[in-house]
Amino acid sequence: MSYSDELEERLGVNYFINGLEEQFDKSEYSGGAKNPQNTLRKLKLFLYREWDEWRPSSKGTIIDSTDCLSLVTIVHLLAARKGVETIIVRPKNITRYFHALLSYEDNGNDDIFKLSGRYRNYDCLPMGVDQVERRIRYTRPVVNLVNTLRFGNNITPPYQ
Image (tube, rainbow, N blue to C red; front, side):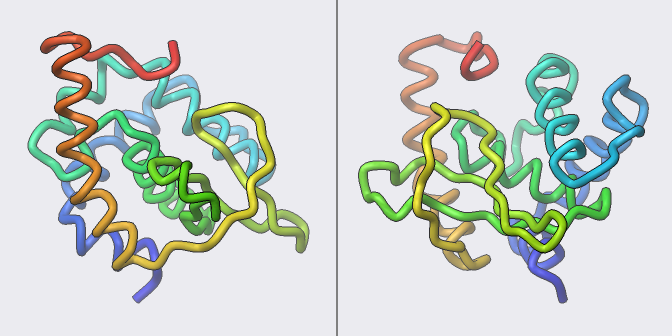
């Protein structure tokens, strides 16, 4: 079983990702990607610009939060379905505990793709499926509580 398949199964988000993939395929962002980075950029644009369309369908799933790790996990699972193999990584620096990025290979070189945050170079460590699942389970309640306190029930897309 691949990294993506195992992660999707462990998180129990198959139904949500199926629906999200259908929405992506119908959107203006699907198709025309020439390389892995272009595909990842299109997925990122879809998530941020079509926020109101897909966000309600994430309710009740383990990745219904707005934190970086949840967004990275969603893009990782969608990218795998689009043929782009990625690995979820985290910065080595402990002060960036909630931050997550994607590592992918393009023309034999390993590159990092950021979904949020500043454009800084981080030394990164790969995260296994167990670690991703554990971090999502621990960070999701904290992030959701903070969002509720800050925004009430009107959570807007992050970083807009």
